[in-house]
Length: 146
Ligand SMILES: [Zn+2]
Image (cartoon, rainbow, N blue to C red; front, side):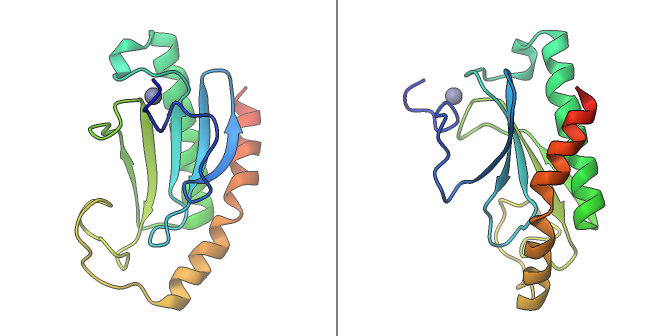
């Protein structure tokens, strides 16, 4: 779909960093100043609903989501991981994997809610530094999966 941002192959620089790309899915590290470590698993083709995928395809995308979740937990030490597939704005299958902390800007509401607090600069900086380990760790974990 020409007007779908997730159908485009080239990431806009503000969107994030491509970590891994397979035939069906790709994984990116989202560039979100408030939520370091935010990752996304994106189905490459323009498909709106999980139930449009075959069972094998569903298993594939969820395996990637769970691998990313495990690496995010291991690297980022969040208080909670949020998994979300909304697609109201962009009806193209993508899963958000978001490390959440009790002191993050939106806690305890969703990452798309109004800000509830400010995270200290030093805390955000150390989380951003940790998130730089994610691309390599995720690539390694996926390579063990397939
Ligand atoms: Zn699309």
